[in-house]
Length: 304
Image 1 (cartoon, rainbow, N blue to C red):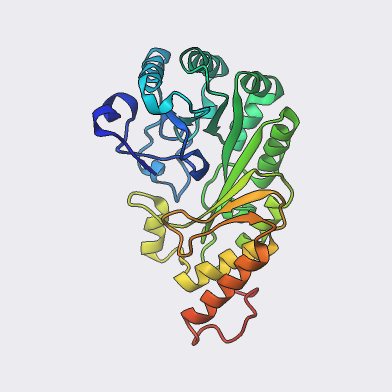
Image 2: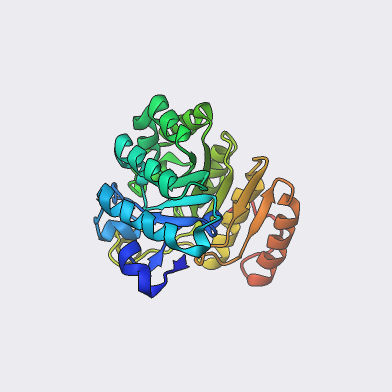
């Protein structure tokens, strides 16, 4: 999260806090949409709002002009489209925005955004290539889980076959991608399946980075209602760490940054995979053994 300069917030951004991935901390942040076009995931804050809106080109161009006038942006070469699912916007609208970016911020070389797998597939090879040729470099995709049962339960609206096909398409086009998933999304019953199948999914693809967050149900979501009603059994903290460790133990991707530094996470983590794998697991073992000796009797952490 990035705090906004109050004097410019009303012109540039719709919310007091800008949500962007960790790798975009130094990027120019251009809001082109607000909310998510899907807004049905049971765990997501956007489910409570259904507020998706794409800004008209004239408004986006005004935002670009303001950003171009700020001295701190003069030499930045990375730009991020703010909005939970910007790839859903019509290709010609995105093209017009990209052209405006290059006109007013000519030093920008890489433009990144969030996108869902279904939108990647709908865009297809030709449109994705057009966007790539205009500077789009990377897409951030929320995988959430490698378990189709977990995806179905949380109403993700996508399955692993679709997501795998979408990422393979990005590989073909030459667009990089960063992925994310949510520790605890399977609850007590599906914790082992969620961890192992998510790692299995990641191992089939070539992410630039992986971001691990921890389930934090927000007010107004179906997930919170299910927890309060006893329909969903949320993992206690020590099991959350066990699940994260199980995922990481099974993760074998190469040349990938793993981020576990979201505010929801119990253990902060930034590591290079697989170079840092053994060190990370050793540190997690130490912490797990110190948390609750009554519940954890040995270092056999693979069974939950």
